[in-house]
Length: 346
Image (cartoon, rainbow, N blue to C red; front, side, top):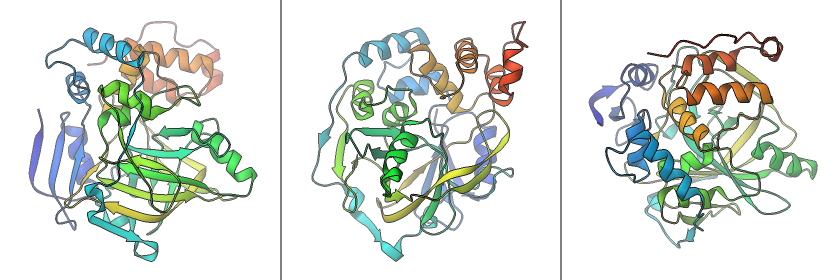
């Protein structure tokens, strides 16, 4: 199932093109300019891979996978705190931090630059309640210590940041790359605000998530991460993110993205960078969204009509129609243009 790419691959365009063309898990073992670093993509591009990542019996049907997930979700598992981890093998602080010490791909020719956050977890805490939020919000590298965080103000991170910003304070955030797929799945899920996605991840994988206390911020991070980047979201600042080739199959920009500033970066010896390409009908994000829609954990914070249509298309495996619903405006949705059933994707 896993394709190991032994030859050198360029981080600019080539790695993304190969990921799009080969719809199977890929491990790029030699990335140009980054000796000792590897990149993993397409980890959940197949239903069987999702089951494998969650410890469901090999060969189980989609129906059995969904049944197992529903059963596990009913019993959240609290995380465990650890004192140490091998992630401390490489530590950079302050001016030593450079996000491009990592093999961040330029995924697509339509993208404005290199995106460090495509299949990762953004972790923050509510300034009022202290509750955690885990999300997957795209991040474009802007400089050695700066990146965008592109999300809606209605997202859980957006709500947390609004509380911090109202007080004139930054929002402490850690970016975890190369975590367990269960943790990424929990972060991508539409879990109710105030509930702990660490507990959901534990439930999905059938064991507690091991956590470490960050050194420079008051946030717990996954101990099994390949890479951790501590920092904060800057109040009173908005920046341009994109254009970026998004899930709907088009290049989009966000002129009101948040600005993330890194203060500390750690990674293991010979780390594996985890990333993803999106925008084609068989990409791993759409496979995951399809599963999440069946267990009631899909929510893009859009209009009710758009969300209802997208959930329907995901459940039916109509990924091209799902993308189309993400591209068209709300006024067209209200006109009821989807009168016939879209053709099955091939």
